[in-house]
Length: 142
Length: 118
Image: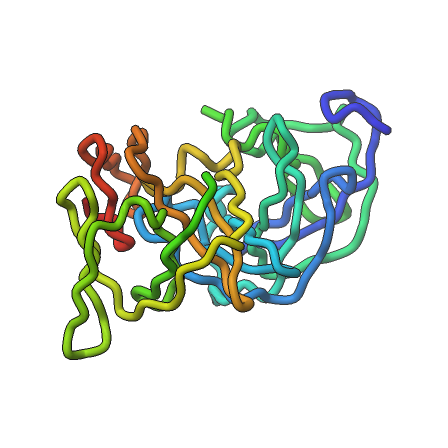
């Protein structure tokens, strides 16, 4: 299994949040679900989209758009939920996204930009500039 | 977090409160209730659902612990919906509110309202 901090190319799922595309490493991806019903979680941070129930288990769902600091897209109904392993303990959380795209190879050696939040840099994938996501940084990022 | 939980509905979401935190219940005419807690704080509920011991509580994921509301100690599911579990006597840390500001922790031993107010 590739080291999440290594430099070798790795497979990732392209996901769109608002006007921003990002690459979610496949090693962190557990499931891709259609929109889940979100319940409010009052008093929580702005990154949290809500709380869901998936197969009898609770799931905290975060807004991928907000985590990426992405410009808001046209809608905010989150048609896709990505269940991922995040944080140092690789706990299951949901990422509410607008679209799940293709699976690509991402070469971290070609990354540019500075790491911020869960974004470790940017790479070009085809004609797109894609933000690379490091989910181990969730909860630890400055 | 273990034991029995009082399940309630408020603002379209389900909440669980440790049964040992409840001192008294007062029904109101609209079908809701006021829950008086042992520390003299109180909670408003739109509906009381059940007293249950089968919630299988899960702790707040560590990676989001800094962003969930103060006083929330875990989550569960019941009847196809997620349940937010409120702690009892928990020293919760501050968390960022939806407007990006920082909210303080509730006074020690007080149970926060499901709407985020202490």
